[in-house]
Length: 70
Image (cartoon, rainbow, N blue to C red; front, side, top):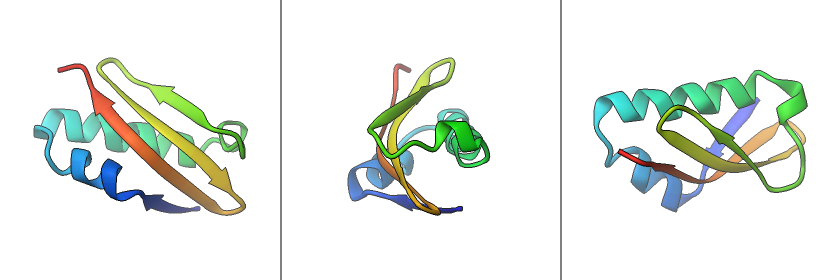
């Protein structure tokens, strides 16, 4: 599965501390590797401190936004 980050998500992802960055990458990897999570509708995934908003189109996972409560 190919992963595309919208500019907003990319900006946040590269502006957070390393530990938070790792959690967001883990969330993206979990969604990309779980076919049941890859729905065409707007969806979200949540970790301990972070979240991401995404949608799937065929073999593309589009990450629209990411965030963190830290």
